[in-house]
Length: 69
Image 1 (cartoon, rainbow, N blue to C red):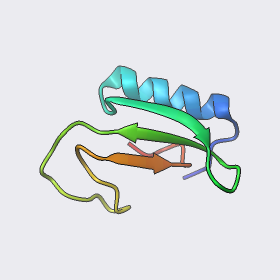
Image 2 (spheres, rainbow, N blue to C red; image 1 turned 90 degrees about the horizontal axis):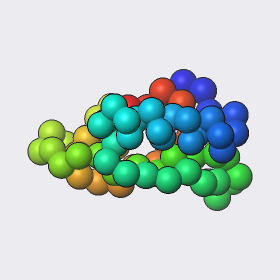
Image 3 (cartoon, rainbow, N blue to C red; image 1 turned 135 degrees about the horizontal axis):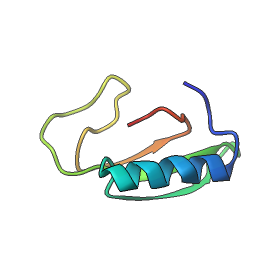
């Protein structure tokens, strides 16, 4: 897992996940420490949390990693 090198890298990941239907909507920005990040909404699901404590469905999540689904 690597952090995004730039806002453009975060946006590329966002667009990829939106096109694949993995994320419903989202946006890129800078985290409070200045790290590029994606904030995204997953489709609704009743499956709970994944291994990184992110909601698997229906909730907003944020990541600075370029490999989060």
